[in-house]
Image 1: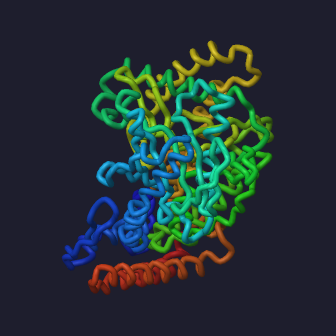
Image 2 (image 1 turned 180 degrees about the vertical axis):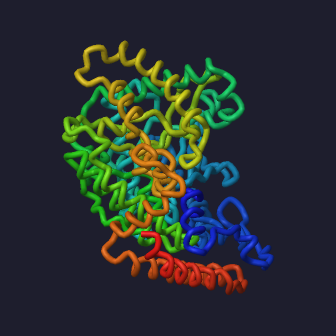
Length: 525
Protein backbone atom coordinates (compact mmCIF):
# COMPACT_ATOMS: atom_id res chain seq x y z
CA UNK A 1 0.00 0.00 0.00
CA UNK A 2 1.35 3.47 -0.92
CA UNK A 3 0.89 5.67 2.15
CA UNK A 4 1.60 8.97 0.34
CA UNK A 5 -1.64 8.98 -1.61
CA UNK A 6 -3.80 7.84 1.27
CA UNK A 7 -2.30 10.59 3.44
CA UNK A 8 -3.03 13.22 0.81
CA UNK A 9 -6.63 12.11 0.48
CA UNK A 10 -7.12 11.77 4.22
CA UNK A 11 -5.74 15.23 4.99
CA UNK A 12 -8.24 16.90 2.66
CA UNK A 13 -11.27 15.00 3.88
CA UNK A 14 -10.69 15.71 7.55
CA UNK A 15 -9.71 12.21 8.65
CA UNK A 16 -6.13 11.18 9.08
CA UNK A 17 -3.75 8.33 8.48
CA UNK A 18 -2.45 7.83 12.00
CA UNK A 19 0.03 5.48 13.51
CA UNK A 20 -1.92 2.79 15.31
CA UNK A 21 0.12 3.38 18.44
CA UNK A 22 -1.16 6.96 18.57
CA UNK A 23 -4.79 6.01 17.95
CA UNK A 24 -4.94 3.43 20.69
CA UNK A 25 -3.73 3.87 24.21
CA UNK A 26 -4.12 0.17 24.88
CA UNK A 27 -1.04 -1.93 25.38
CA UNK A 28 -1.75 -5.25 23.73
CA UNK A 29 1.14 -7.56 24.53
CA UNK A 30 -0.69 -10.90 24.52
CA UNK A 31 1.07 -13.18 22.05
CA UNK A 32 -0.35 -15.87 19.77
CA UNK A 33 1.62 -18.38 17.76
CA UNK A 34 1.81 -18.35 13.98
CA UNK A 35 3.71 -21.03 12.09
CA UNK A 36 7.18 -19.53 12.43
CA UNK A 37 6.82 -16.73 14.97
CA UNK A 38 4.70 -15.18 17.67
CA UNK A 39 2.54 -12.12 17.12
CA UNK A 40 0.92 -9.59 19.46
CA UNK A 41 -2.47 -7.99 18.98
CA UNK A 42 -0.83 -4.64 18.24
CA UNK A 43 1.17 -6.25 15.44
CA UNK A 44 -1.78 -8.27 14.16
CA UNK A 45 -4.11 -5.30 13.73
CA UNK A 46 -1.45 -3.47 11.68
CA UNK A 47 -0.85 -6.46 9.41
CA UNK A 48 -2.24 -6.59 5.89
CA UNK A 49 -2.29 -10.39 6.11
CA UNK A 50 -5.38 -12.27 7.26
CA UNK A 51 -4.01 -13.03 10.72
CA UNK A 52 -7.29 -14.59 11.88
CA UNK A 53 -6.91 -17.20 9.16
CA UNK A 54 -3.18 -17.69 9.77
CA UNK A 55 -3.76 -18.39 13.47
CA UNK A 56 -5.30 -21.70 12.42
CA UNK A 57 -2.06 -22.87 10.74
CA UNK A 58 -0.23 -24.17 13.84
CA UNK A 59 -3.16 -26.42 14.69
CA UNK A 60 -3.26 -27.70 11.10
CA UNK A 61 0.50 -28.23 11.14
CA UNK A 62 -0.04 -31.13 13.51
CA UNK A 63 -0.68 -33.17 10.36
CA UNK A 64 3.08 -33.86 10.38
CA UNK A 65 2.41 -36.16 13.32
CA UNK A 66 0.03 -38.13 11.12
CA UNK A 67 2.73 -38.40 8.46
CA UNK A 68 5.28 -39.65 10.99
CA UNK A 69 2.92 -42.35 12.22
CA UNK A 70 2.78 -43.61 8.64
CA UNK A 71 6.55 -43.79 8.17
CA UNK A 72 6.40 -47.53 7.48
CA UNK A 73 3.87 -46.88 4.72
CA UNK A 74 6.14 -44.14 3.35
CA UNK A 75 9.10 -46.52 3.35
CA UNK A 76 7.03 -49.11 1.49
CA UNK A 77 5.90 -46.53 -1.09
CA UNK A 78 9.45 -45.33 -1.71
CA UNK A 79 10.65 -48.90 -2.03
CA UNK A 80 7.91 -49.62 -4.54
CA UNK A 81 8.86 -46.59 -6.64
CA UNK A 82 12.50 -47.69 -6.65
CA UNK A 83 11.92 -51.42 -6.92
CA UNK A 84 13.93 -52.18 -3.77
CA UNK A 85 13.27 -53.86 -0.43
CA UNK A 86 11.31 -51.69 2.08
CA UNK A 87 13.85 -52.51 4.78
CA UNK A 88 16.44 -50.46 2.87
CA UNK A 89 14.28 -47.31 3.01
CA UNK A 90 14.62 -45.37 6.24
CA UNK A 91 12.40 -42.33 6.92
CA UNK A 92 14.53 -39.78 8.74
CA UNK A 93 13.50 -38.23 12.06
CA UNK A 94 11.19 -35.16 12.07
CA UNK A 95 14.03 -32.85 13.15
CA UNK A 96 15.48 -33.35 9.66
CA UNK A 97 12.20 -32.62 7.89
CA UNK A 98 11.82 -29.34 6.04
CA UNK A 99 8.64 -27.29 5.88
CA UNK A 100 8.39 -24.63 3.19
CA UNK A 101 5.64 -22.27 2.12
CA UNK A 102 3.58 -25.03 0.49
CA UNK A 103 5.21 -28.41 1.17
CA UNK A 104 6.40 -30.73 3.91
CA UNK A 105 9.62 -32.40 2.74
CA UNK A 106 10.52 -35.73 4.35
CA UNK A 107 14.01 -37.14 3.60
CA UNK A 108 14.24 -40.90 3.09
CA UNK A 109 17.63 -42.61 3.25
CA UNK A 110 18.32 -45.61 1.03
CA UNK A 111 20.68 -47.61 3.23
CA UNK A 112 21.87 -49.91 0.46
CA UNK A 113 23.35 -46.98 -1.50
CA UNK A 114 23.68 -44.22 1.16
CA UNK A 115 21.79 -41.80 -1.08
CA UNK A 116 18.73 -39.85 0.00
CA UNK A 117 15.43 -39.05 -1.64
CA UNK A 118 12.78 -36.60 -0.53
CA UNK A 119 9.05 -37.18 -0.52
CA UNK A 120 7.16 -33.87 -0.75
CA UNK A 121 3.65 -33.58 0.65
CA UNK A 122 1.64 -30.46 -0.23
CA UNK A 123 0.33 -28.85 2.95
CA UNK A 124 -3.49 -28.75 2.63
CA UNK A 125 -3.76 -25.73 4.94
CA UNK A 126 -1.30 -23.76 2.72
CA UNK A 127 -2.57 -24.65 -0.77
CA UNK A 128 -6.25 -23.89 -0.21
CA UNK A 129 -7.41 -27.50 -0.27
CA UNK A 130 -10.02 -26.86 2.41
CA UNK A 131 -11.48 -23.89 0.53
CA UNK A 132 -11.15 -25.40 -2.95
CA UNK A 133 -10.90 -29.19 -2.65
CA UNK A 134 -8.54 -30.69 -5.18
CA UNK A 135 -5.91 -27.94 -5.04
CA UNK A 136 -3.29 -30.29 -3.57
CA UNK A 137 -3.85 -32.85 -6.33
CA UNK A 138 -3.81 -30.09 -8.95
CA UNK A 139 -0.50 -28.82 -7.63
CA UNK A 140 1.06 -32.29 -7.71
CA UNK A 141 -0.22 -33.01 -11.24
CA UNK A 142 1.15 -29.70 -12.53
CA UNK A 143 4.54 -30.05 -10.88
CA UNK A 144 4.97 -33.64 -12.05
CA UNK A 145 3.98 -32.63 -15.58
CA UNK A 146 6.47 -29.75 -15.56
CA UNK A 147 9.29 -32.05 -14.45
CA UNK A 148 8.37 -34.51 -17.19
CA UNK A 149 8.16 -31.84 -19.91
CA UNK A 150 11.42 -30.10 -19.00
CA UNK A 151 13.25 -33.42 -18.66
CA UNK A 152 12.13 -34.39 -22.15
CA UNK A 153 12.30 -31.06 -23.98
CA UNK A 154 15.01 -29.13 -22.09
CA UNK A 155 17.26 -31.78 -20.47
CA UNK A 156 20.14 -29.31 -20.01
CA UNK A 157 18.18 -27.54 -17.24
CA UNK A 158 19.41 -29.11 -13.97
CA UNK A 159 16.62 -30.48 -11.76
CA UNK A 160 16.16 -33.35 -9.31
CA UNK A 161 15.03 -36.61 -10.86
CA UNK A 162 11.33 -37.32 -10.32
CA UNK A 163 10.63 -40.98 -9.48
CA UNK A 164 6.87 -40.78 -9.24
CA UNK A 165 3.90 -39.15 -7.57
CA UNK A 166 0.53 -39.96 -6.05
CA UNK A 167 -2.84 -38.26 -5.60
CA UNK A 168 -5.30 -38.09 -2.74
CA UNK A 169 -7.47 -40.59 -4.63
CA UNK A 170 -4.82 -43.27 -4.08
CA UNK A 171 -3.59 -43.18 -7.67
CA UNK A 172 0.17 -43.72 -8.01
CA UNK A 173 2.34 -43.02 -11.02
CA UNK A 174 5.42 -45.21 -10.90
CA UNK A 175 7.81 -46.61 -13.48
CA UNK A 176 6.23 -50.06 -13.18
CA UNK A 177 2.75 -51.42 -12.31
CA UNK A 178 1.59 -50.46 -8.82
CA UNK A 179 -0.26 -52.63 -6.35
CA UNK A 180 0.54 -50.93 -3.05
CA UNK A 181 -2.15 -48.67 -1.53
CA UNK A 182 -1.38 -45.00 -0.89
CA UNK A 183 -2.57 -43.91 2.57
CA UNK A 184 -0.51 -40.72 2.85
CA UNK A 185 -2.24 -38.32 0.47
CA UNK A 186 -0.73 -36.60 -2.57
CA UNK A 187 3.05 -36.43 -2.87
CA UNK A 188 6.04 -36.31 -5.21
CA UNK A 189 9.18 -38.43 -4.81
CA UNK A 190 12.47 -37.04 -6.08
CA UNK A 191 16.19 -36.82 -5.44
CA UNK A 192 17.41 -35.03 -2.32
CA UNK A 193 19.86 -32.22 -3.09
CA UNK A 194 22.94 -32.81 -0.95
CA UNK A 195 25.56 -30.20 -0.05
CA UNK A 196 27.90 -31.76 -2.59
CA UNK A 197 25.32 -31.00 -5.29
CA UNK A 198 25.24 -27.28 -4.51
CA UNK A 199 24.18 -24.84 -1.84
CA UNK A 200 21.08 -22.68 -1.63
CA UNK A 201 21.69 -19.28 -3.21
CA UNK A 202 19.84 -17.61 -0.33
CA UNK A 203 22.50 -18.84 2.13
CA UNK A 204 24.88 -16.00 1.23
CA UNK A 205 22.82 -13.92 -1.18
CA UNK A 206 22.56 -10.79 0.97
CA UNK A 207 26.18 -10.96 2.14
CA UNK A 208 27.80 -11.21 -1.29
CA UNK A 209 25.36 -9.96 -3.92
CA UNK A 210 26.10 -6.23 -3.94
CA UNK A 211 29.84 -6.45 -3.44
CA UNK A 212 30.82 -9.16 -5.90
CA UNK A 213 30.15 -8.42 -9.57
CA UNK A 214 31.78 -11.66 -10.73
CA UNK A 215 29.34 -13.77 -8.71
CA UNK A 216 26.41 -11.73 -10.05
CA UNK A 217 27.53 -12.18 -13.64
CA UNK A 218 27.88 -15.94 -13.19
CA UNK A 219 24.39 -16.11 -11.70
CA UNK A 220 22.92 -13.91 -14.44
CA UNK A 221 24.57 -16.07 -17.11
CA UNK A 222 23.06 -19.23 -15.64
CA UNK A 223 19.62 -17.61 -15.28
CA UNK A 224 19.77 -16.36 -18.87
CA UNK A 225 20.59 -19.86 -20.10
CA UNK A 226 17.58 -21.29 -18.27
CA UNK A 227 15.20 -18.65 -19.68
CA UNK A 228 16.59 -18.97 -23.21
CA UNK A 229 16.54 -22.77 -23.11
CA UNK A 230 12.85 -22.71 -22.23
CA UNK A 231 12.20 -20.15 -24.97
CA UNK A 232 13.42 -22.60 -27.62
CA UNK A 233 10.07 -24.36 -27.41
CA UNK A 234 7.05 -22.18 -28.31
CA UNK A 235 3.78 -23.43 -26.84
CA UNK A 236 0.27 -23.13 -28.34
CA UNK A 237 -1.52 -21.48 -25.42
CA UNK A 238 -1.29 -19.91 -21.97
CA UNK A 239 -1.70 -22.30 -19.05
CA UNK A 240 0.09 -24.93 -16.96
CA UNK A 241 1.04 -28.47 -17.83
CA UNK A 242 -0.83 -31.27 -16.07
CA UNK A 243 -0.81 -35.06 -16.14
CA UNK A 244 -4.14 -36.64 -16.96
CA UNK A 245 -5.50 -39.88 -15.50
CA UNK A 246 -3.86 -41.87 -18.30
CA UNK A 247 -0.42 -40.46 -17.52
CA UNK A 248 -0.17 -38.08 -20.49
CA UNK A 249 1.31 -34.58 -20.15
CA UNK A 250 -1.10 -31.96 -21.46
CA UNK A 251 -1.16 -28.17 -21.51
CA UNK A 252 -4.73 -28.07 -20.23
CA UNK A 253 -4.60 -26.60 -16.71
CA UNK A 254 -5.30 -23.03 -15.61
CA UNK A 255 -2.13 -20.97 -15.14
CA UNK A 256 -1.22 -22.16 -11.65
CA UNK A 257 0.80 -19.46 -9.88
CA UNK A 258 1.81 -19.31 -6.23
CA UNK A 259 -0.17 -16.08 -5.86
CA UNK A 260 -3.35 -17.80 -7.06
CA UNK A 261 -3.02 -20.58 -4.51
CA UNK A 262 -2.19 -18.10 -1.74
CA UNK A 263 -5.40 -16.21 -2.50
CA UNK A 264 -7.51 -19.37 -2.56
CA UNK A 265 -5.89 -20.46 0.68
CA UNK A 266 -7.08 -17.16 2.18
CA UNK A 267 -10.58 -18.04 0.94
CA UNK A 268 -10.60 -15.58 -1.94
CA UNK A 269 -12.60 -17.08 -4.83
CA UNK A 270 -10.82 -16.75 -8.18
CA UNK A 271 -13.73 -18.11 -10.25
CA UNK A 272 -11.30 -19.62 -12.78
CA UNK A 273 -12.02 -23.27 -13.69
CA UNK A 274 -9.09 -25.67 -13.50
CA UNK A 275 -9.33 -26.38 -17.24
CA UNK A 276 -9.22 -22.67 -18.22
CA UNK A 277 -6.43 -21.95 -20.72
CA UNK A 278 -5.97 -18.88 -22.91
CA UNK A 279 -5.26 -18.40 -26.59
CA UNK A 280 -4.65 -14.65 -26.40
CA UNK A 281 -2.74 -12.26 -24.18
CA UNK A 282 -5.69 -9.92 -23.66
CA UNK A 283 -7.98 -12.69 -22.37
CA UNK A 284 -5.28 -13.75 -19.90
CA UNK A 285 -4.69 -10.17 -18.72
CA UNK A 286 -8.43 -9.67 -18.28
CA UNK A 287 -8.65 -12.66 -15.92
CA UNK A 288 -5.58 -11.51 -13.97
CA UNK A 289 -7.34 -8.19 -13.41
CA UNK A 290 -10.48 -10.07 -12.38
CA UNK A 291 -8.41 -11.92 -9.76
CA UNK A 292 -7.16 -8.57 -8.46
CA UNK A 293 -10.77 -7.35 -8.23
CA UNK A 294 -11.72 -10.40 -6.19
CA UNK A 295 -8.76 -9.84 -3.89
CA UNK A 296 -10.09 -6.40 -2.98
CA UNK A 297 -13.68 -7.62 -2.70
CA UNK A 298 -13.01 -10.61 -0.46
CA UNK A 299 -9.95 -9.76 1.65
CA UNK A 300 -11.61 -9.22 5.06
CA UNK A 301 -8.94 -6.76 6.22
CA UNK A 302 -8.39 -5.24 2.79
CA UNK A 303 -8.37 -1.67 4.11
CA UNK A 304 -6.82 0.20 6.98
CA UNK A 305 -8.71 3.44 6.41
CA UNK A 306 -11.40 4.43 3.92
CA UNK A 307 -8.82 6.44 1.99
CA UNK A 308 -6.79 3.28 1.53
CA UNK A 309 -9.72 1.48 -0.08
CA UNK A 310 -10.32 4.43 -2.42
CA UNK A 311 -6.71 4.30 -3.65
CA UNK A 312 -7.06 0.58 -4.37
CA UNK A 313 -10.30 1.06 -6.28
CA UNK A 314 -8.76 3.87 -8.32
CA UNK A 315 -5.64 1.82 -9.10
CA UNK A 316 -7.70 -1.14 -10.30
CA UNK A 317 -9.88 1.12 -12.47
CA UNK A 318 -6.81 2.55 -14.16
CA UNK A 319 -5.05 -0.81 -14.50
CA UNK A 320 -7.97 -2.05 -16.56
CA UNK A 321 -8.19 1.17 -18.59
CA UNK A 322 -4.46 1.10 -19.41
CA UNK A 323 -4.03 -2.60 -20.23
CA UNK A 324 -3.98 -2.11 -24.01
CA UNK A 325 -1.23 0.51 -23.71
CA UNK A 326 1.32 -2.01 -22.43
CA UNK A 327 0.94 -4.96 -24.81
CA UNK A 328 1.79 -5.34 -28.50
CA UNK A 329 -1.13 -6.32 -30.72
CA UNK A 330 1.24 -8.34 -32.91
CA UNK A 331 2.03 -10.58 -29.92
CA UNK A 332 -1.57 -11.06 -28.76
CA UNK A 333 -1.72 -14.60 -30.19
CA UNK A 334 1.75 -15.63 -29.09
CA UNK A 335 4.40 -16.86 -29.00
CA UNK A 336 4.03 -18.37 -25.52
CA UNK A 337 6.85 -19.96 -23.55
CA UNK A 338 7.22 -21.89 -20.30
CA UNK A 339 8.25 -19.60 -17.45
CA UNK A 340 9.37 -20.58 -13.94
CA UNK A 341 7.34 -17.95 -12.09
CA UNK A 342 8.63 -18.78 -8.59
CA UNK A 343 12.35 -18.87 -9.33
CA UNK A 344 13.81 -17.20 -6.23
CA UNK A 345 17.04 -17.49 -4.25
CA UNK A 346 15.84 -20.38 -2.06
CA UNK A 347 14.87 -22.46 -5.10
CA UNK A 348 18.26 -22.10 -6.78
CA UNK A 349 21.27 -24.22 -5.82
CA UNK A 350 24.68 -22.93 -6.92
CA UNK A 351 28.36 -23.80 -6.68
CA UNK A 352 30.90 -21.57 -4.93
CA UNK A 353 31.05 -19.34 -8.02
CA UNK A 354 27.26 -18.96 -8.22
CA UNK A 355 26.84 -21.10 -11.31
CA UNK A 356 23.44 -22.78 -11.12
CA UNK A 357 23.71 -26.48 -10.28
CA UNK A 358 20.06 -27.32 -9.63
CA UNK A 359 16.57 -25.79 -9.63
CA UNK A 360 13.89 -27.05 -7.24
CA UNK A 361 10.23 -26.38 -6.51
CA UNK A 362 9.10 -25.73 -10.07
CA UNK A 363 5.41 -26.30 -9.32
CA UNK A 364 4.44 -22.78 -10.40
CA UNK A 365 5.64 -23.04 -14.01
CA UNK A 366 3.32 -21.40 -16.55
CA UNK A 367 3.24 -21.12 -20.32
CA UNK A 368 3.11 -17.33 -20.55
CA UNK A 369 3.18 -14.56 -23.17
CA UNK A 370 6.65 -13.52 -24.33
CA UNK A 371 6.13 -10.09 -22.74
CA UNK A 372 5.74 -11.77 -19.32
CA UNK A 373 9.23 -13.27 -19.53
CA UNK A 374 11.30 -10.82 -17.49
CA UNK A 375 14.44 -10.69 -15.36
CA UNK A 376 13.58 -11.66 -11.76
CA UNK A 377 12.17 -8.77 -9.73
CA UNK A 378 14.47 -9.68 -6.81
CA UNK A 379 17.71 -8.69 -8.55
CA UNK A 380 18.24 -5.94 -5.95
CA UNK A 381 17.28 -8.15 -3.01
CA UNK A 382 14.18 -6.03 -2.37
CA UNK A 383 10.54 -7.08 -2.07
CA UNK A 384 8.03 -6.23 -4.79
CA UNK A 385 6.70 -3.11 -3.08
CA UNK A 386 10.14 -1.86 -2.04
CA UNK A 387 12.01 -1.97 -5.36
CA UNK A 388 14.20 1.08 -5.94
CA UNK A 389 13.85 2.04 -9.64
CA UNK A 390 17.39 3.44 -9.91
CA UNK A 391 19.04 0.48 -8.22
CA UNK A 392 16.95 -2.03 -10.14
CA UNK A 393 17.71 -0.24 -13.42
CA UNK A 394 21.44 -0.86 -12.85
CA UNK A 395 20.88 -4.55 -12.18
CA UNK A 396 18.47 -4.83 -15.11
CA UNK A 397 21.11 -3.37 -17.42
CA UNK A 398 23.72 -5.81 -16.11
CA UNK A 399 21.37 -8.74 -16.59
CA UNK A 400 20.40 -7.71 -20.12
CA UNK A 401 24.04 -7.37 -21.16
CA UNK A 402 24.61 -11.01 -20.24
CA UNK A 403 21.22 -12.07 -21.62
CA UNK A 404 21.96 -10.61 -25.06
CA UNK A 405 25.33 -12.34 -25.19
CA UNK A 406 23.75 -15.70 -24.37
CA UNK A 407 20.89 -15.15 -26.81
CA UNK A 408 23.34 -14.40 -29.62
CA UNK A 409 25.10 -17.70 -28.88
CA UNK A 410 21.99 -19.83 -28.38
CA UNK A 411 19.34 -18.29 -30.69
CA UNK A 412 21.13 -16.27 -33.39
CA UNK A 413 18.39 -16.82 -35.99
CA UNK A 414 15.23 -16.80 -33.86
CA UNK A 415 12.59 -14.58 -35.57
CA UNK A 416 11.59 -12.74 -32.39
CA UNK A 417 14.47 -11.93 -30.08
CA UNK A 418 13.52 -12.20 -26.41
CA UNK A 419 16.01 -9.49 -25.50
CA UNK A 420 14.36 -6.90 -27.76
CA UNK A 421 10.94 -7.60 -26.20
CA UNK A 422 12.35 -7.47 -22.66
CA UNK A 423 14.05 -4.15 -23.39
CA UNK A 424 10.88 -2.69 -24.84
CA UNK A 425 8.75 -3.71 -21.84
CA UNK A 426 11.32 -2.02 -19.62
CA UNK A 427 11.34 1.17 -21.69
CA UNK A 428 7.53 1.41 -21.88
CA UNK A 429 6.92 0.55 -18.22
CA UNK A 430 5.17 -2.70 -19.12
CA UNK A 431 7.63 -4.41 -16.77
CA UNK A 432 5.93 -2.70 -13.80
CA UNK A 433 2.43 -3.27 -15.16
CA UNK A 434 3.07 -7.01 -15.59
CA UNK A 435 4.64 -7.23 -12.14
CA UNK A 436 1.59 -5.49 -10.65
CA UNK A 437 -0.76 -7.88 -12.47
CA UNK A 438 0.92 -10.82 -10.75
CA UNK A 439 1.25 -9.23 -7.28
CA UNK A 440 -2.14 -8.76 -5.56
CA UNK A 441 -0.62 -7.40 -2.37
CA UNK A 442 1.84 -5.17 -4.25
CA UNK A 443 -0.35 -3.75 -7.01
CA UNK A 444 -1.29 -0.58 -5.17
CA UNK A 445 2.29 0.46 -4.48
CA UNK A 446 3.51 -0.57 -7.93
CA UNK A 447 0.77 1.41 -9.65
CA UNK A 448 1.27 4.70 -7.80
CA UNK A 449 5.05 4.43 -7.68
CA UNK A 450 5.88 3.18 -11.18
CA UNK A 451 2.85 3.30 -13.49
CA UNK A 452 0.74 6.38 -12.74
CA UNK A 453 3.69 8.84 -13.00
CA UNK A 454 4.09 7.85 -16.66
CA UNK A 455 0.72 9.38 -17.45
CA UNK A 456 0.07 12.19 -14.98
CA UNK A 457 1.77 14.18 -12.24
CA UNK A 458 1.36 12.99 -8.68
CA UNK A 459 1.22 14.96 -5.45
CA UNK A 460 -1.60 17.09 -4.07
CA UNK A 461 -3.46 16.96 -7.41
CA UNK A 462 -3.63 13.21 -6.97
CA UNK A 463 -6.60 13.58 -4.62
CA UNK A 464 -8.84 14.81 -7.41
CA UNK A 465 -7.49 12.04 -9.62
CA UNK A 466 -8.51 9.46 -7.01
CA UNK A 467 -11.96 10.95 -6.54
CA UNK A 468 -12.52 11.07 -10.30
CA UNK A 469 -11.50 7.47 -10.96
CA UNK A 470 -12.34 5.28 -7.97
CA UNK A 471 -16.07 5.24 -8.80
CA UNK A 472 -15.38 3.60 -12.17
CA UNK A 473 -14.29 0.39 -10.44
CA UNK A 474 -17.85 -0.68 -9.56
CA UNK A 475 -21.37 0.55 -10.22
CA UNK A 476 -22.13 1.64 -6.65
CA UNK A 477 -18.78 2.64 -5.20
CA UNK A 478 -20.33 4.24 -2.12
CA UNK A 479 -22.19 1.06 -1.19
CA UNK A 480 -19.02 -0.97 -1.71
CA UNK A 481 -17.04 1.31 0.61
CA UNK A 482 -19.71 0.97 3.29
CA UNK A 483 -19.80 -2.83 2.94
CA UNK A 484 -16.00 -2.99 3.01
CA UNK A 485 -15.90 -1.00 6.24
CA UNK A 486 -18.44 -3.40 7.79
CA UNK A 487 -16.32 -6.40 6.75
CA UNK A 488 -13.25 -4.82 8.29
CA UNK A 489 -15.14 -4.16 11.52
CA UNK A 490 -16.22 -7.81 11.63
CA UNK A 491 -12.62 -8.86 11.07
CA UNK A 492 -11.43 -6.55 13.85
CA UNK A 493 -13.93 -8.13 16.26
CA UNK A 494 -12.79 -11.64 15.34
CA UNK A 495 -9.19 -10.59 15.83
CA UNK A 496 -9.96 -9.24 19.29
CA UNK A 497 -11.70 -12.50 20.18
CA UNK A 498 -8.61 -14.44 19.11
CA UNK A 499 -6.41 -12.33 21.40
CA UNK A 500 -8.99 -11.96 24.19
CA UNK A 501 -8.77 -8.16 24.15
CA UNK A 502 -11.27 -5.31 23.85
CA UNK A 503 -10.47 -2.45 21.48
CA UNK A 504 -13.59 -0.40 20.72
CA UNK A 505 -11.71 2.56 19.29
CA UNK A 506 -10.53 0.71 16.20
CA UNK A 507 -14.06 0.29 14.83
CA UNK A 508 -15.21 3.69 16.03
CA UNK A 509 -12.42 5.25 13.98
CA UNK A 510 -13.63 3.42 10.86
CA UNK A 511 -17.16 4.79 11.30
CA UNK A 512 -15.81 8.30 11.77
CA UNK A 513 -13.64 7.88 8.67
CA UNK A 514 -16.58 6.86 6.52
CA UNK A 515 -18.82 9.69 7.77
CA UNK A 516 -16.17 12.33 7.15
CA UNK A 517 -15.42 10.93 3.72
CA UNK A 518 -19.09 11.16 2.73
CA UNK A 519 -19.23 14.79 3.85
CA UNK A 520 -16.00 15.80 2.13
CA UNK A 521 -16.37 13.86 -1.13
CA UNK A 522 -18.56 16.38 -3.06
CA UNK A 523 -15.99 19.15 -2.58
CA UNK A 524 -13.17 16.96 -3.88
CA UNK A 525 -14.70 15.93 -7.18
